Amino acid sequence: MEKLGFEVTPILYGLGPNLEKRAYLFEFAYGKGAILVSTLNFEKMNLINPEVQYVFDCLLDYCDSPAFAPVHQVTPEELEHARMRN
Image (cartoon, rainbow, N blue to C red; front, top):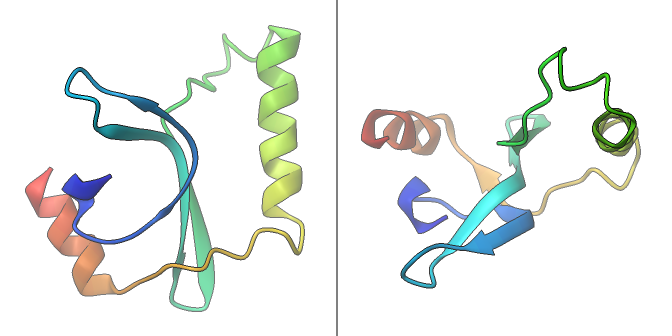
């Protein structure tokens, strides 16, 4: 998460080989909206599995709810800088 260069709200994370946090699902506010980023594999062929479809549906419901209100704001410059670094 530190590699991005800005703060995000991790929702699902694990530990890397050097015990650093790696976010697999995180969110941040951007402009007047919000962005949910997932590294989970929701390709069509995986959505035939009920458990994958369930998680995907839950994330869609979450994004459509008032609970989806990230606290960390990211500027266009920060996002562009992260894109260029990675």
